[in-house]
Length: 403
Image (cartoon, rainbow, N blue to C red):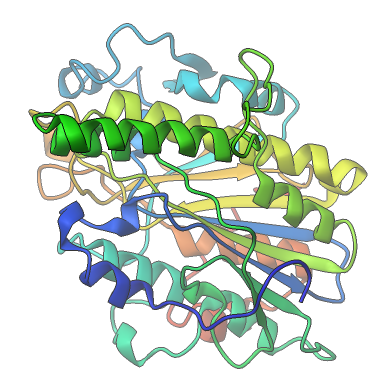
Protein backbone atom coordinates (compact mmCIF):
# COMPACT_ATOMS: atom_id res chain seq x y z
CA UNK A 1 0.00 0.00 0.00
CA UNK A 2 1.56 3.31 -1.08
CA UNK A 3 -0.67 5.87 0.61
CA UNK A 4 -4.22 4.77 1.20
CA UNK A 5 -6.36 1.71 1.57
CA UNK A 6 -6.89 -1.41 -0.51
CA UNK A 7 -10.49 -2.21 -1.29
CA UNK A 8 -12.67 -4.16 -3.70
CA UNK A 9 -13.26 -2.25 -6.95
CA UNK A 10 -16.73 -0.95 -7.71
CA UNK A 11 -18.14 -2.16 -11.03
CA UNK A 12 -18.68 0.86 -13.27
CA UNK A 13 -21.56 -0.82 -15.12
CA UNK A 14 -23.43 -1.78 -11.91
CA UNK A 15 -22.88 1.65 -10.38
CA UNK A 16 -24.03 3.56 -13.44
CA UNK A 17 -27.10 1.46 -14.14
CA UNK A 18 -28.26 1.97 -10.56
CA UNK A 19 -27.98 5.75 -10.89
CA UNK A 20 -30.80 6.70 -13.25
CA UNK A 21 -31.29 10.13 -11.65
CA UNK A 22 -28.51 11.68 -13.68
CA UNK A 23 -30.22 10.66 -16.90
CA UNK A 24 -27.76 9.80 -19.65
CA UNK A 25 -24.86 8.33 -17.67
CA UNK A 26 -22.74 8.99 -14.63
CA UNK A 27 -19.89 7.69 -16.76
CA UNK A 28 -19.91 11.23 -18.06
CA UNK A 29 -19.65 12.75 -14.59
CA UNK A 30 -16.42 13.52 -12.71
CA UNK A 31 -17.28 12.17 -9.25
CA UNK A 32 -14.98 9.17 -9.74
CA UNK A 33 -11.47 9.41 -11.15
CA UNK A 34 -9.32 6.34 -11.63
CA UNK A 35 -5.60 5.97 -12.25
CA UNK A 36 -3.45 2.91 -12.86
CA UNK A 37 0.30 2.61 -12.65
CA UNK A 38 2.57 -0.08 -14.04
CA UNK A 39 6.27 -0.82 -13.55
CA UNK A 40 8.15 -2.34 -16.49
CA UNK A 41 11.77 -2.84 -17.60
CA UNK A 42 11.76 0.04 -20.09
CA UNK A 43 13.07 3.56 -19.92
CA UNK A 44 10.27 5.34 -21.77
CA UNK A 45 7.00 6.30 -20.08
CA UNK A 46 3.46 5.96 -21.44
CA UNK A 47 0.48 7.78 -19.93
CA UNK A 48 -3.01 6.82 -21.16
CA UNK A 49 -5.92 9.12 -20.36
CA UNK A 50 -9.42 7.69 -20.82
CA UNK A 51 -11.79 10.66 -21.23
CA UNK A 52 -15.18 9.26 -20.24
CA UNK A 53 -18.34 10.84 -21.58
CA UNK A 54 -17.41 11.40 -25.26
CA UNK A 55 -15.29 14.52 -25.70
CA UNK A 56 -16.35 16.73 -28.61
CA UNK A 57 -13.31 16.64 -30.88
CA UNK A 58 -14.89 19.12 -33.29
CA UNK A 59 -14.92 21.71 -30.50
CA UNK A 60 -11.47 20.84 -29.13
CA UNK A 61 -9.69 20.98 -32.50
CA UNK A 62 -12.01 23.06 -34.66
CA UNK A 63 -11.91 22.76 -38.46
CA UNK A 64 -12.53 26.48 -38.85
CA UNK A 65 -11.19 26.41 -42.40
CA UNK A 66 -13.78 23.86 -43.50
CA UNK A 67 -16.57 25.90 -45.15
CA UNK A 68 -19.36 23.73 -43.71
CA UNK A 69 -18.27 23.89 -40.08
CA UNK A 70 -19.57 27.33 -39.09
CA UNK A 71 -23.10 26.43 -40.09
CA UNK A 72 -23.20 23.57 -37.61
CA UNK A 73 -21.97 25.53 -34.58
CA UNK A 74 -23.85 28.82 -34.37
CA UNK A 75 -23.79 29.38 -30.59
CA UNK A 76 -21.32 26.98 -28.93
CA UNK A 77 -18.19 28.78 -30.14
CA UNK A 78 -19.69 32.24 -30.60
CA UNK A 79 -17.16 34.92 -29.68
CA UNK A 80 -14.41 32.43 -28.80
CA UNK A 81 -10.89 33.37 -29.81
CA UNK A 82 -9.74 29.98 -31.08
CA UNK A 83 -5.98 29.47 -31.30
CA UNK A 84 -4.58 28.88 -34.82
CA UNK A 85 -2.83 25.54 -35.29
CA UNK A 86 -2.02 26.00 -38.96
CA UNK A 87 -3.97 24.73 -41.94
CA UNK A 88 -7.71 24.56 -41.35
CA UNK A 89 -7.57 23.87 -37.60
CA UNK A 90 -7.77 26.02 -34.47
CA UNK A 91 -7.60 25.00 -30.81
CA UNK A 92 -10.24 25.56 -28.15
CA UNK A 93 -9.20 28.62 -26.09
CA UNK A 94 -9.38 26.69 -22.79
CA UNK A 95 -6.27 24.80 -23.91
CA UNK A 96 -4.26 28.02 -24.27
CA UNK A 97 -1.95 26.96 -21.38
CA UNK A 98 -0.78 24.09 -23.62
CA UNK A 99 0.21 26.26 -26.58
CA UNK A 100 3.86 26.49 -25.42
CA UNK A 101 3.96 22.68 -25.72
CA UNK A 102 2.49 22.93 -29.24
CA UNK A 103 5.17 25.40 -30.28
CA UNK A 104 7.86 23.22 -28.68
CA UNK A 105 6.66 20.20 -30.67
CA UNK A 106 5.40 18.41 -27.53
CA UNK A 107 1.66 18.56 -28.24
CA UNK A 108 -0.28 17.17 -31.18
CA UNK A 109 -3.66 15.74 -32.12
CA UNK A 110 -5.08 12.93 -34.25
CA UNK A 111 -8.41 13.92 -35.79
CA UNK A 112 -11.31 11.86 -37.19
CA UNK A 113 -10.46 8.79 -35.09
CA UNK A 114 -12.68 6.24 -33.36
CA UNK A 115 -12.87 2.66 -32.17
CA UNK A 116 -14.76 0.18 -34.41
CA UNK A 117 -17.89 0.89 -32.33
CA UNK A 118 -20.77 2.34 -34.37
CA UNK A 119 -24.37 3.54 -34.25
CA UNK A 120 -25.67 2.58 -30.79
CA UNK A 121 -23.61 5.35 -29.15
CA UNK A 122 -23.83 3.97 -25.61
CA UNK A 123 -21.32 5.24 -23.05
CA UNK A 124 -21.24 1.79 -21.45
CA UNK A 125 -20.50 -0.12 -24.64
CA UNK A 126 -18.26 2.57 -26.11
CA UNK A 127 -16.02 2.70 -23.04
CA UNK A 128 -15.94 -1.08 -22.71
CA UNK A 129 -14.79 -1.47 -26.32
CA UNK A 130 -12.25 1.35 -25.98
CA UNK A 131 -10.66 -0.25 -22.92
CA UNK A 132 -10.93 -3.82 -24.14
CA UNK A 133 -9.21 -2.80 -27.37
CA UNK A 134 -11.19 -5.26 -29.47
CA UNK A 135 -13.15 -5.02 -32.70
CA UNK A 136 -16.86 -5.58 -33.11
CA UNK A 137 -16.30 -9.20 -34.12
CA UNK A 138 -15.49 -10.10 -30.50
CA UNK A 139 -18.32 -9.83 -27.93
CA UNK A 140 -16.99 -7.36 -25.38
CA UNK A 141 -18.68 -9.32 -22.56
CA UNK A 142 -16.36 -12.22 -23.36
CA UNK A 143 -13.20 -10.13 -23.03
CA UNK A 144 -11.65 -10.58 -19.59
CA UNK A 145 -8.69 -8.23 -19.94
CA UNK A 146 -7.86 -4.77 -21.23
CA UNK A 147 -5.30 -3.88 -23.88
CA UNK A 148 -2.74 -2.46 -21.43
CA UNK A 149 -2.93 -5.66 -19.40
CA UNK A 150 -2.48 -7.80 -22.50
CA UNK A 151 0.59 -5.79 -23.41
CA UNK A 152 2.02 -6.32 -19.91
CA UNK A 153 1.31 -10.07 -20.00
CA UNK A 154 4.13 -10.47 -22.49
CA UNK A 155 6.71 -8.69 -20.32
CA UNK A 156 8.91 -11.04 -18.25
CA UNK A 157 9.87 -10.40 -14.65
CA UNK A 158 6.91 -8.33 -13.50
CA UNK A 159 5.97 -8.45 -9.80
CA UNK A 160 2.86 -7.89 -7.72
CA UNK A 161 3.79 -4.20 -7.54
CA UNK A 162 3.94 -3.81 -11.31
CA UNK A 163 0.52 -2.15 -11.67
CA UNK A 164 -1.76 -0.05 -9.51
CA UNK A 165 -5.44 0.84 -9.99
CA UNK A 166 -6.02 4.13 -8.19
CA UNK A 167 -9.49 5.43 -7.36
CA UNK A 168 -12.92 3.90 -6.87
CA UNK A 169 -13.90 3.34 -10.48
CA UNK A 170 -13.27 0.23 -12.53
CA UNK A 171 -10.39 0.53 -15.02
CA UNK A 172 -10.94 -2.19 -17.59
CA UNK A 173 -7.95 -1.15 -19.70
CA UNK A 174 -5.67 -2.71 -17.04
CA UNK A 175 -7.85 -5.60 -15.92
CA UNK A 176 -6.49 -9.10 -16.53
CA UNK A 177 -3.94 -11.65 -15.31
CA UNK A 178 -0.96 -9.28 -15.29
CA UNK A 179 -0.32 -8.52 -11.61
CA UNK A 180 -1.80 -5.31 -10.25
CA UNK A 181 -3.04 -3.90 -6.94
CA UNK A 182 -5.60 -1.25 -5.93
CA UNK A 183 -4.97 2.02 -4.11
CA UNK A 184 -7.57 4.60 -3.03
CA UNK A 185 -6.38 8.16 -2.40
CA UNK A 186 -7.94 10.48 0.14
CA UNK A 187 -11.50 11.24 -0.98
CA UNK A 188 -12.20 14.45 -2.83
CA UNK A 189 -15.63 15.76 -3.78
CA UNK A 190 -15.43 17.34 -7.22
CA UNK A 191 -18.31 18.94 -9.10
CA UNK A 192 -18.08 19.77 -12.79
CA UNK A 193 -19.93 22.69 -14.36
CA UNK A 194 -22.41 20.15 -15.72
CA UNK A 195 -23.06 18.74 -12.23
CA UNK A 196 -23.62 22.23 -10.86
CA UNK A 197 -26.15 23.05 -13.57
CA UNK A 198 -27.97 19.79 -12.79
CA UNK A 199 -28.16 20.54 -9.04
CA UNK A 200 -29.27 24.10 -9.63
CA UNK A 201 -32.08 23.00 -11.98
CA UNK A 202 -33.22 20.20 -9.65
CA UNK A 203 -33.49 22.42 -6.58
CA UNK A 204 -34.27 25.81 -8.14
CA UNK A 205 -37.85 25.99 -6.78
CA UNK A 206 -37.14 24.49 -3.36
CA UNK A 207 -35.34 27.04 -1.14
CA UNK A 208 -34.38 24.46 1.50
CA UNK A 209 -32.68 22.04 -0.89
CA UNK A 210 -31.37 24.86 -3.09
CA UNK A 211 -29.53 26.49 -0.19
CA UNK A 212 -28.19 23.12 1.00
CA UNK A 213 -26.91 22.32 -2.51
CA UNK A 214 -25.19 25.70 -2.79
CA UNK A 215 -23.55 25.14 0.59
CA UNK A 216 -22.37 21.68 -0.54
CA UNK A 217 -20.87 23.11 -3.73
CA UNK A 218 -19.03 25.78 -1.75
CA UNK A 219 -17.68 23.09 0.59
CA UNK A 220 -16.55 21.03 -2.42
CA UNK A 221 -14.64 24.03 -3.74
CA UNK A 222 -12.83 24.44 -0.42
CA UNK A 223 -11.97 20.75 -0.18
CA UNK A 224 -10.77 20.45 -3.76
CA UNK A 225 -8.45 23.43 -3.48
CA UNK A 226 -6.77 21.78 -0.52
CA UNK A 227 -8.20 24.22 2.01
CA UNK A 228 -10.16 21.66 4.00
CA UNK A 229 -12.68 23.40 6.24
CA UNK A 230 -10.65 26.58 6.17
CA UNK A 231 -9.84 29.04 3.40
CA UNK A 232 -9.01 27.75 -0.09
CA UNK A 233 -5.39 27.49 -1.14
CA UNK A 234 -4.46 30.47 -3.32
CA UNK A 235 -3.94 29.67 -7.00
CA UNK A 236 -2.36 32.34 -9.25
CA UNK A 237 -4.90 34.04 -11.50
CA UNK A 238 -5.19 32.30 -14.85
CA UNK A 239 -3.06 29.32 -13.79
CA UNK A 240 -4.58 25.81 -14.08
CA UNK A 241 -5.08 24.18 -10.68
CA UNK A 242 -2.52 21.36 -10.27
CA UNK A 243 -3.92 17.84 -10.64
CA UNK A 244 -3.06 15.84 -7.49
CA UNK A 245 -3.43 12.47 -9.21
CA UNK A 246 -1.15 13.58 -12.02
CA UNK A 247 1.37 14.75 -9.43
CA UNK A 248 1.22 11.34 -7.74
CA UNK A 249 1.65 9.58 -11.08
CA UNK A 250 4.60 11.77 -12.00
CA UNK A 251 6.28 10.94 -8.69
CA UNK A 252 5.97 7.24 -9.45
CA UNK A 253 6.97 7.63 -13.09
CA UNK A 254 10.19 9.33 -12.05
CA UNK A 255 11.08 6.09 -10.29
CA UNK A 256 10.24 2.48 -11.29
CA UNK A 257 6.81 3.01 -12.85
CA UNK A 258 6.69 3.14 -16.64
CA UNK A 259 2.96 3.15 -17.48
CA UNK A 260 0.14 5.21 -15.99
CA UNK A 261 -3.53 5.39 -16.97
CA UNK A 262 -6.10 7.90 -15.74
CA UNK A 263 -9.86 7.84 -16.04
CA UNK A 264 -11.14 11.42 -16.32
CA UNK A 265 -14.91 11.82 -16.31
CA UNK A 266 -17.31 14.64 -17.17
CA UNK A 267 -17.13 14.94 -20.99
CA UNK A 268 -20.83 14.42 -21.80
CA UNK A 269 -22.04 17.77 -23.14
CA UNK A 270 -25.68 17.42 -24.17
CA UNK A 271 -26.40 20.79 -22.55
CA UNK A 272 -24.46 24.01 -21.95
CA UNK A 273 -21.40 22.70 -23.77
CA UNK A 274 -19.69 26.07 -23.87
CA UNK A 275 -19.35 26.24 -20.08
CA UNK A 276 -18.94 22.52 -19.42
CA UNK A 277 -16.25 21.84 -22.01
CA UNK A 278 -14.29 24.93 -21.04
CA UNK A 279 -13.96 23.61 -17.49
CA UNK A 280 -13.14 20.09 -18.62
CA UNK A 281 -10.40 21.27 -20.99
CA UNK A 282 -8.92 23.53 -18.33
CA UNK A 283 -8.67 20.45 -16.13
CA UNK A 284 -7.09 18.42 -18.92
CA UNK A 285 -4.51 21.16 -19.47
CA UNK A 286 -3.76 21.11 -15.74
CA UNK A 287 -3.29 17.34 -15.83
CA UNK A 288 -0.80 17.51 -18.71
CA UNK A 289 1.09 20.45 -17.22
CA UNK A 290 1.22 18.76 -13.79
CA UNK A 291 2.74 15.70 -15.46
CA UNK A 292 5.31 17.81 -17.28
CA UNK A 293 6.26 19.70 -14.13
CA UNK A 294 6.39 16.59 -11.95
CA UNK A 295 8.33 14.46 -14.43
CA UNK A 296 11.09 17.01 -14.89
CA UNK A 297 13.85 15.54 -17.06
CA UNK A 298 11.81 12.32 -17.52
CA UNK A 299 9.25 14.32 -19.57
CA UNK A 300 11.50 14.01 -22.62
CA UNK A 301 10.99 10.21 -22.45
CA UNK A 302 7.22 10.45 -21.97
CA UNK A 303 4.25 9.97 -24.32
CA UNK A 304 0.74 10.96 -23.21
CA UNK A 305 -2.27 9.81 -25.23
CA UNK A 306 -5.83 10.89 -24.36
CA UNK A 307 -8.68 8.80 -25.82
CA UNK A 308 -12.47 9.02 -25.62
CA UNK A 309 -15.17 6.47 -26.43
CA UNK A 310 -16.60 8.39 -29.41
CA UNK A 311 -17.05 11.92 -30.70
CA UNK A 312 -20.17 14.07 -30.88
CA UNK A 313 -22.56 15.27 -33.55
CA UNK A 314 -21.43 17.87 -36.06
CA UNK A 315 -24.53 19.96 -35.38
CA UNK A 316 -25.25 21.50 -32.02
CA UNK A 317 -28.63 20.71 -30.50
CA UNK A 318 -31.31 23.01 -29.13
CA UNK A 319 -29.82 22.97 -25.61
CA UNK A 320 -26.49 24.51 -26.51
CA UNK A 321 -24.83 21.11 -26.56
CA UNK A 322 -24.06 18.19 -28.85
CA UNK A 323 -25.25 14.59 -28.86
CA UNK A 324 -23.39 11.28 -29.10
CA UNK A 325 -21.49 10.93 -32.37
CA UNK A 326 -18.72 8.87 -33.95
CA UNK A 327 -15.42 10.40 -35.08
CA UNK A 328 -13.43 12.35 -32.48
CA UNK A 329 -9.99 13.60 -31.48
CA UNK A 330 -7.04 11.97 -29.74
CA UNK A 331 -4.63 14.19 -27.78
CA UNK A 332 -0.88 13.51 -27.93
CA UNK A 333 1.61 15.13 -25.57
CA UNK A 334 5.07 14.60 -24.12
CA UNK A 335 8.72 15.10 -24.86
CA UNK A 336 8.82 11.89 -26.90
CA UNK A 337 5.99 13.06 -29.20
CA UNK A 338 6.48 14.63 -32.61
CA UNK A 339 4.00 17.40 -31.95
CA UNK A 340 3.05 20.66 -33.57
CA UNK A 341 0.84 18.72 -35.98
CA UNK A 342 -2.75 17.55 -36.44
CA UNK A 343 -2.48 13.94 -37.67
CA UNK A 344 -4.95 12.01 -39.76
CA UNK A 345 -6.85 12.23 -43.02
CA UNK A 346 -9.48 14.96 -42.78
CA UNK A 347 -12.83 13.77 -44.25
CA UNK A 348 -14.53 17.15 -44.25
CA UNK A 349 -17.85 18.03 -42.64
CA UNK A 350 -19.93 18.78 -45.70
CA UNK A 351 -23.37 17.18 -45.46
CA UNK A 352 -22.40 14.42 -47.89
CA UNK A 353 -19.20 13.64 -45.95
CA UNK A 354 -20.80 13.05 -42.54
CA UNK A 355 -21.23 9.57 -41.10
CA UNK A 356 -24.94 8.70 -41.09
CA UNK A 357 -25.60 12.30 -42.09
CA UNK A 358 -24.76 13.56 -38.57
CA UNK A 359 -21.28 12.69 -37.31
CA UNK A 360 -17.66 13.29 -38.24
CA UNK A 361 -16.62 10.37 -40.45
CA UNK A 362 -13.79 8.31 -38.87
CA UNK A 363 -10.78 7.87 -41.14
CA UNK A 364 -8.50 6.05 -38.68
CA UNK A 365 -8.75 3.59 -35.80
CA UNK A 366 -7.80 5.20 -32.49
CA UNK A 367 -6.24 1.88 -31.46
CA UNK A 368 -3.70 2.17 -34.28
CA UNK A 369 -2.21 5.33 -32.76
CA UNK A 370 -1.93 3.60 -29.38
CA UNK A 371 -0.34 0.57 -31.05
CA UNK A 372 2.22 2.66 -32.93
CA UNK A 373 3.04 4.47 -29.69
CA UNK A 374 3.78 1.13 -27.96
CA UNK A 375 5.71 -0.06 -31.01
CA UNK A 376 7.90 3.05 -30.92
CA UNK A 377 8.34 3.21 -27.16
CA UNK A 378 8.82 -0.46 -26.35
CA UNK A 379 9.73 -2.15 -29.62
CA UNK A 380 6.73 -4.49 -29.57
CA UNK A 381 6.25 -6.57 -32.71
CA UNK A 382 3.43 -5.41 -35.00
CA UNK A 383 2.11 -8.97 -35.15
CA UNK A 384 1.75 -9.06 -31.36
CA UNK A 385 0.06 -5.67 -31.35
CA UNK A 386 -2.40 -6.57 -34.13
CA UNK A 387 -3.24 -10.08 -32.96
CA UNK A 388 -2.87 -10.05 -29.17
CA UNK A 389 -2.93 -6.54 -27.73
CA UNK A 390 -5.53 -5.23 -30.20
CA UNK A 391 -7.10 -8.35 -31.79
CA UNK A 392 -8.10 -7.77 -35.39
CA UNK A 393 -6.44 -4.36 -35.71
CA UNK A 394 -4.82 -3.29 -38.97
CA UNK A 395 -2.20 -0.79 -37.82
CA UNK A 396 -1.71 0.57 -41.35
CA UNK A 397 1.23 2.83 -42.08
CA UNK A 398 3.23 4.35 -39.25
CA UNK A 399 1.87 7.88 -38.70
CA UNK A 400 5.19 8.94 -37.15
CA UNK A 401 3.80 10.39 -33.94
CA UNK A 402 7.03 9.74 -31.96
CA UNK A 403 10.48 11.23 -32.35
